[in-house]
Length: 125
Image (tube, rainbow, N blue to C red; front, side, top):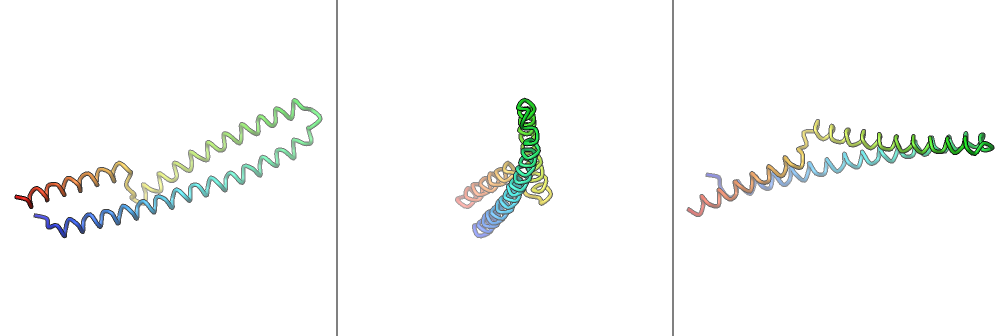
């Protein structure tokens, strides 16, 4: 039979570990956002370079319009690719660190709650 103090210790430990995992996940998420910000700055630099090069062709509006459209499409595509890479990297990093998924944490909480109910049932008998 599990004592109430042992159960409290398990719950406290579970909450502490969960908090630490959430904090680690938050840091990984923030690192991912930082990566997006750095890449965005780089993309802006590329865009500015394209604008400068585009000024050379300013006399031909159709050509410039095509270049601007290409640049926008390139920037948009790069942004989507960066987002996918960041999401994949964050998920992979969390998996390598052994950080459980949200579903796994909820399953663990459900199991602890079920154990708590069982202990309460047994202690009331």
